[in-house]
Amino acid sequence: MKRTGITAIYLENFKGISECVKIPLKPITLLFGANSAGKSTIIQAIHYIREIILRNNPNANFTEIGGESIDLGGFNNLINLHDNSKKITIGFEITPDDDGIPNYSDMFDINHQLELGSNYYTHIDINAKVETFRLDFVVSYDTENQMPWVSQVKYNINDDDLLDIVVDRYEAKPYISNINLEHELFNGKLLDEYELEIDSNFLEVIDYLFDSEKNIRLEYSNTCILSDKYPVIFNYIGTSSGMEIDFKSFNHFFQQILLGTLSLLKEHINQFRYLGPIRKIPNRHHIVPSFIDENRWADGMAAWDLLYNSDFNDDSKDSLITKVNKYLSEQYTDVGYELTVKEYRELPTDNIELLGLKKLLVNFEDEDESLLKKFLNSIEGIQVKKRIELRDINNNIFVRGKDIGVGISQVIPVIVGSISDSKKIFAIEQPELHLHPKVQCNLADVFVEEMNKDNERIFLIETHSEHLVLRLQKLIRNGKLKPEDISIIFVSRDTEGSKVTTLRLDEEGCFIDSWPGGFFPERRNELRG
Image 1 (cartoon, helix red, strand yellow):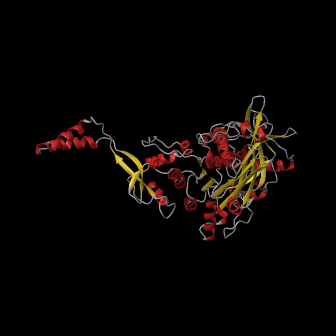
Image 2 (cartoon, rainbow, N blue to C red):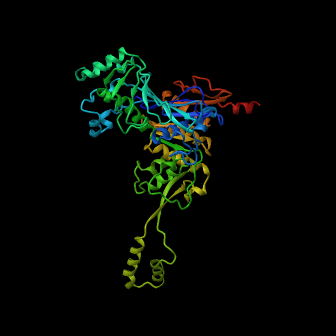
C-alpha cells in the first residue's frame, strides 16, 4: 500500500539546526539523542509551522495546542544562534492520496469563478502528473518593525523546483518569481493529455513564456501569501519589453499549484496532536468539559475527557474503554489494572427523600408503599454521575488514578491517543515515562497495531527508551513490521549545532547504519568499568 500524507520535514536555521536537514517521517518515527541535543526541536518545528500557516503567527510563543509544555519564545528565540539576520526555513514533503491536490472547483464556489471573468480556464488538472510535492516556508525578520514575516514560499513538485512566492518586505505585496519553465507541468506532456480542451490563449501564453526571459514575475494579487480562502487572480504577465498578455485562462491551472497544495498541507498540519512529557493525573472529582479541547492533550487531560465522554453503556469491542483495556491487558502492556465505570447519584444528607426513606425503614407499613415509590422515583430523577476507576485485577480492588503508581496514569493518555484516530500525526514526548522496561517494550506493539489501521498515521515519538527499539527490531524479525515503516532519527550536538542522522534497519531488524557512539553503550561501559 502506498504511503500518503506528510513523508518528510526539512529544517534550516531553526534553533540548534543550521544547515538544511531532512527528517523522513514514517508510520513510526523515533527521535533519539542526549538531553538538549535537539530532539524536541523537530516536534517544535511542527508546532511553529502550524502557528504560521493556520494562524498567520510567525512570532509564536505559546501555541494553540501545546498547552504549558510548549513555549516557543518567538522568532528571536527560534532563529539559529539568535541571529535575526538569518532566515528560518521549514519544509514539508507530501504524497497526495487518491483524491489528489484540490483543484479550483473543489476550493471555490461560483461567485469566485465569476470574479475571474468568463474565460477562466477550468479543464487542466495537475494530479495526473503529481507524485509528490514540497512546500518550503522561509521566515525573515524585519528589524525596523521588529516583526518576522513569511518572506518566501518555495514550490517543488516531483523533486523539481517549480516556482517561488516572494514577499520582499514586511507587509509588502507578494509576487511569483523563479519560474522553472522547463518543469514537466509546463511542457507538452501535460498539455497533450488535455489536447481537446486547451484553449488557444493558454497555448499562446505557454509559447510566449518559453521564448522569454526565465525570471518572469507574475502579479500575485487579491490574497494573502498564506491564505487559501480566495483565488489568486493573474491579470497579466509583465516583462522587460513592456508586453502584456491576458492571463485569465491560466487561473485555474495556478489555483491548483499554489493554493491546492497549500490547502492540502493545511489539512495535514491540522491533523497534528501533541502529548507532552508530563501527563497530569485527574483529581478525584474530575470535571468533564463540554467539548474536547485539543490544547488539553498537551498534559494528557484530554485523554481522560475523551474517556469520560465515551459511551459507557457500549460494551462492544469497538468502545473506547474496551479498546484501552485491551492494551492494558496481559496480552499487551500487562499493567495489572483495567478501567471500570462507576455510576452514582449525589444526595445531600438533608435530602427530603432520603430522610423520608430513613423514617420508612424504622416503621414501614403496607400503606406506605406508594410513598416509598414516590421517594424512589424522586431519587431516580437525580442526575446520574460517572467516574472512571481502575480495578486491581489480582485483588479485585477499585482505586483512583491518585491511588496507584504514576506509571499507570502516564501510560493511559499514550494508549488513548494511539487509539483515537481523529488526528493522523500523534507526537509523544517520552511515552516511557515512569514505566517498567517490560511495559516500554509492549508499548511498541500498541503503536504498530494502530499504525497498521491507517496508511497516513504517524507516531512521532521523542524517547530515550532502548527497550522500545529492541521490541521494534523483534517485530521486524517476526514479520509483523516492515523496516520501511520505521524511521529512527538520532540527534547529536557539536560546536556547529545539532546534527541529524537517519538510522536504517534491514529485513532482520539489524541496523544498517552504525548508531553514533554505539547502541546505548552505558550498560556495557558500566559492566566493564
